[in-house]
Every structure is written in structure tokens, then in C-alpha cells.
Image 1 (cartoon, rainbow, N blue to C red):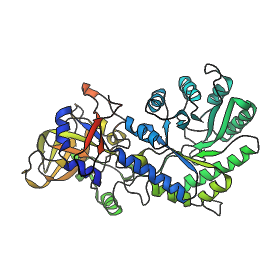
Image 2: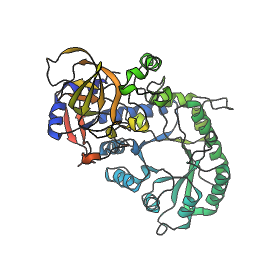
Image 3: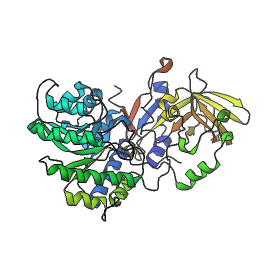
Image 4: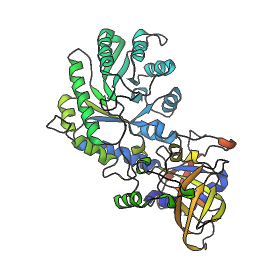
Length: 444
């Protein structure tokens, strides 16, 4: 898959070698305009379907401050699951009432801050509900705003959500709590990217809202979490890769199975997947999900991460060593696969890195190479595949991994070997003029 146009402009600008020299190590660059465009696309999908909705950015997908800032500037919210994430979001301009607090077994300090700032809390267990109702969080500040998170029927072993008996108990306690809390609706955490199960469960939650209103509860909204896929490549390239890949394509005969990979192609993705979801008819219903939501007056809450970060950044490494092996090379770069997280899930990040040669007259041809990390671990490779680079890789060249803003940059980062964490650079302008950049405020 080739980088998108904005990333291509950065690659062609000459900025990246300067930054690599300045930082003396790997770094990430961020493209916040892509975040803005993805958010705008989701809002347009909601408007086209006639659905009232609200988008929260799932902060766990990227720690950069700029994305919380863009969410705040765009009137969106942020999904947080820790005290640190909540404080970061508030500190970068997100209003308290535009926060949703998720995650299991929440720390009392997190619940206390959430109530104080008027955040919406996805209650995951009865003891959380008791803590909110019972005033054990340092005194009653204001009514706690909550959703009750339901255990998906198709995922009985999930560690997220309330079972049917627990949900019935929780509703009884919400009714008895009176002004201590506002029960605003229901939510769920559903793994996978299939649209039909998500639509079916959303319809069930609409029914729960209608029943809860009969008991005097507000029940005005449902949260369907994230789960909007991103398409990194076209269908032909993806299916051709799956059909042809075998151990000979990888360093040391490494073996991957089809199910090991993220679905790097999706027929519908991002805002398109949201539009398709809203047009899906839940099982047992003769009308699409959008109509169920509008007829019942239920607000749809979304918590996308990767889908808001599509094409919103890339990761840059410098080649610091090249070894010749039988029929291919092993490149060693100045960082680790902890900054490109897919390997740590026994998988492979499939978008190929772009080689930026230091020598413009470098030999051209086909030069297969795998990419290793600057650690003492035999298995620490950023890319096991023998990538057919069109230019002979040399020490000092740059490797740019595209489209890494969604989870790749942050979910496993570590200063292993006392290597510093790669800084994040915000590129504020990617038009015809030379890019303008600054350090992300989370780094500074």
C-alpha cells in the first residue's frame, strides 16, 4: 500500500532527514488534519442517516496531546480509562461532560474525578454502581452520569459488562438511587468488526432504553464502542498476500497464519462502515438501525480510535546496520518493535515501509530485506517479511512506516535498553509550502 497524499508530501519535503538528525533516533510524525477529516466523515454519516449521535475519541489508541486538542476544537469527546488519561484530556481542552470513562474495575480516584467533572461513566460491575450511589468517593458532588454496560450474549466469556441477572439488579438499584445518579442508558464492549452483531446488540440496547424509561429512568442514549474497521490496502493486494504468503517470505522461516493478521482490507471502513452499520437491519426488525434510533429518540454514542487516526501519522527509523544473508538482507534500525506494536501480538504490520535513501544515486533494482530492532533479542524484528525495496538499503537511510497513528505508536512503547521513547512531531501544514512542525505537547 502506498502512503496517502499528505504523507507523500512530507516524504518529499526533505523534512524527515533533518528531524532524524536533530532527534538522533526514531520519531513519529502526526497529521492532525487527517483526524479532522475522519471526524467530519463520521458526523456526515450520522447526519445522512438522520441519526443524532456523539463521537468520543478513544484516547488509548494514541497518547498524543494533539488528538485530544483536535477533539476538543471539533466539539467531540474523549474516551478515557485512567486518571492520567482523564487529566490529559481535561488539560488539553476537553470539557468534562464530553468525557466517557470506560475500562473494568475502575479506581475510586478515577470515579471521583469523573463525577466531579460531570463525565459519563460506563458502569461495568455492581460494586462500581454501589460506590457511585453510596457516596464512598469523598462526598456527594453531583449526580453521577452513568451507562450500564451489558455483557454481549455472543461473548459470554468477556470480562466486560453486566450479565442478565446483574443488569436486572443494577436497574433496581438505579431506580432506588433517585437523585444520586442519572442513568442515561446502556453500552457494550464487542470484539471484532462484523456489522450485523453490532447492529443486533445496538437494537437490543434500544429496547432496554424503552423498558428503563417505563421505570422512570432517563435512558436516552446507547454506546456501541469502537469497532469501525480501517482499510490499509485494496482488496486485490490483501487477498493476494494471504493466498501467496508462506514461510519462505519471512526471515528465519517465520510462519504466520491468516488469523494472525489485522484485517488490512475492509470493503467498508471508517465513516463508510458507520453508514453501513446504520443501514443494517437488526435481526428480528424490519427497519434499519438508524430508524430504530430515531423512532425511539435514542442518541448514538461512538468511541472510535483507529478509525479516527487513519492516515494521521507515520513512524520514522534510521538504518544503522545492514547484514547480507542468503538472498536477502537484514536491516537493523535505531529503535525497537515496541514502537511498532503489531509484533508484540505475534503478528506483522503489513503496510510496507518506504525507504528514503541518503544517496540520491543509490543503486536501483529489487533488494529484499527484513527489518530488525536495536536490541539483544533474536525475535525483535519490526518486519519479518523480506520486503522488496526498489533501492539498495544502506546505513544512514530512513525507513518510514506509514499510517501508524492507530495503536502502533503507543500500545507497547518501552525504554528497553534505556533507549528513549520516540518523540512525536506534529506537522501542522502539508500543503505546497514546506511543512511546518512542532513537538507534540504530550512529549514536552
